[in-house]
Image (tube, rainbow, N blue to C red):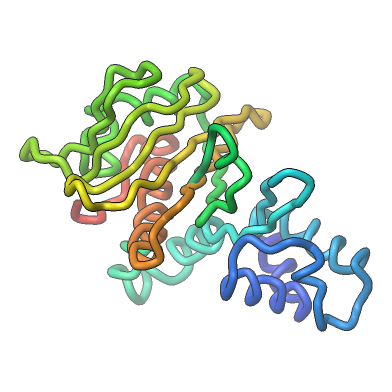
Length: 244
């Protein structure tokens, strides 16, 4: 956390984060515009933000898109603010992806990265076991977990809020599925989970592609809450209480 606070203390890095908050997923050229410094200088500031997890980068062809990653800020909020002043705000939080054909070049709507003290196998199980997902998500993620299988985000009463199809599955490294409401007219988006060992931790990157503009705010808030609750469950044995 000390490193995060030091990174946030610089006015230029604050401006970069403000720009990403206003328009997430920008190239180095776009972020460098009107900053009054060289691209190399901006690159160095972005490297500091990436090192502490406040920014994450995703390749799109030859371009490198930079995304604000609010998960570390949410962790600070939980530790230093929420439990003292506004517990209800802990319910605001969220990740995303894209996969096949030309659509892999699409710009993700949101990208979230978090590091969890666990193993890839345990994290994979937490993403695919219905009883476990119910603990930290309030829903059971049900599927046969093979490419082409249906995927259901079931409420505890057995009804479905969201449905989809498994698009890619490579245990315990990558899972991707489509995402849509149960109504036939609902737009279809896609979610990808990437798991990478990082020493004693696992780096989890969630990307959500093609998210309709009207769903962006609610879905991104939801992802932040889900990921924070997942991290808490795997590291402490207790999910966060969001009143699912």
